[in-house]
Image 1 (cartoon, rainbow, N blue to C red):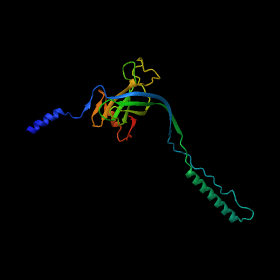
Image 2 (cartoon, rainbow, N blue to C red):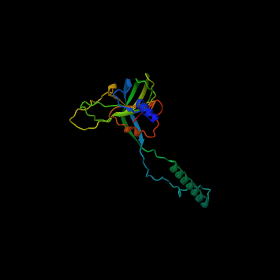
Image 3 (cartoon, rainbow, N blue to C red):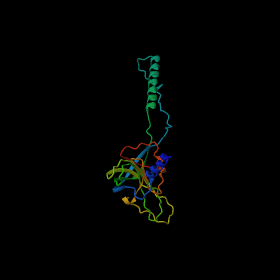
Image 4 (tube, rainbow, N blue to C red):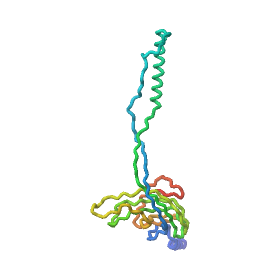
Amino acid sequence: MKSLFLFIIVSSIIPLAQTSSQKESGLEMVSLQTKNETRKTEDRLNVVSQKPPVIKPTLGRGTADATDSRNVAQLKDKWEDQGARSQGLNAAANQREVPPRRTSVHTVYVFRAEMKNTTAKTITRFVWAYHLPDPSGISTAQDNQYLCNLTLAPGKVKSLKVVSRVPREMVVNASAPSTPSGHVPTINDMLINQIVFADNDKWQRSGWNSVILTQVGARKIGKGKCIEL
C-alpha cells in the first residue's frame, strides 16, 4: 500500500512526455532567401508504332551474268533475295522509334533559410510551411509544407534548402481581393507546424493537422535534408 501511494506521488511529480501546444515553438527562422526558377521537364509519351517493317524483295530482278547458266542465275537470285530479306527483318527488329516528348514548364521557389534552436533541447525533426497571405483574411491556397530531418542542438543555427512548387490559389469568390501577383515570400509568411525533440517530446502548432505526415510513408529522408510534403 505504501509503495502504491509512493508511485502515485512520483507520477504526479514527473509528467509523461506529451505534445505541447504553446504559442512559441522554440524554432526560429533567422534568415530567408527566395529565388524564382522556371524549370522544364520532358516526359516521353507512350506511343505504339503501327508501321509494319518495310521489306523490298529483289527476286526476279536478275543477278546473272553472261557466263551463268539458267540454274545458276536463278540460284543467285534466290540467295540475294534471301540475304536482302534477312537484312530487312534484322533492321526492323533492331529499329526503335523514339517516342515524342511532352515538355512542361513550371515555376518553383528555391528557399534558402537559416533555422535557430532557441530551446534547451536538441531538435531532430520539424515541419514548417509557406503560408500564402491573403488580404481578404480567408485562406484561398493550401500551405506548402516541408519536413526536415535536421538535428539542431540548443542555441545552434543551421542552413537548409528547399525547392518548392508555387502555390495555386483556389477561386472561392471572384469579387474578393486576391494576393497580389508577384508576391515574394518573406519570413513573416513562414509557419512552424511541428517540432520533434531528441527525447521524443513534441511541440505542435495549435490547429495544425498532422495527417499530412502520413503521406511521407516509406520515403526516406536523408540526414540534414528537407522534402516537400
